[in-house]
Length: 273
Image (tube, rainbow, N blue to C red):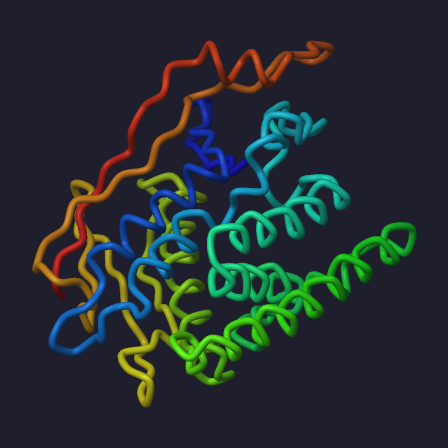
């Protein structure tokens, strides 16, 4: 889950990982204009972006309660072996849709442990406790094996041979990282705390990456420059549940809490900067 920050004394907006990914998919569906190439293969990229956290479906509610915050465990506080489980099951589910989706999803899983293939300075694999390192290393090797196997499948099909090219795959991987981190910008921090930020290495084409600057303008409107979407102003949203910290000694059934708590939307617009 994603536990959004909140002003003192207010409930926190809690977002399931699959709902986080759905917002990423909203961005993907309107990406592309005269300056940014549309996604290719479009339908498969939209699928893997929208489903890049599908392995969380059965475990999100079981991620546990943070002893300090008395809220559900935030993504980064989720127990290591649960994270490792989702890192393997998500690519497996995407592979069942299409080998290309399986490769991109697997790269996403492997990259999260290795600084997003150099796009981030957060090297999560170095933070894994020794007691869990063997299981995590086994999962990560499995993802490298999956990538090699699925690239062979893509190469064997004349219609998808070019999709197995490493540069082509990395371009699409970077696009997934942009949509993922753009969604996280809105989802991890309360809107009142948003500040200007930049997104590096966003592919405008196979030959060119751009750095995009996102600025809050007030009233849930943000400008993005250079602008990558197909219309000049787009409305997006993320769904979640407002949950206050639980009292000391309380042991809530988080699955039931999520069922009983009304689903709400946080909406925002992005305009051309």
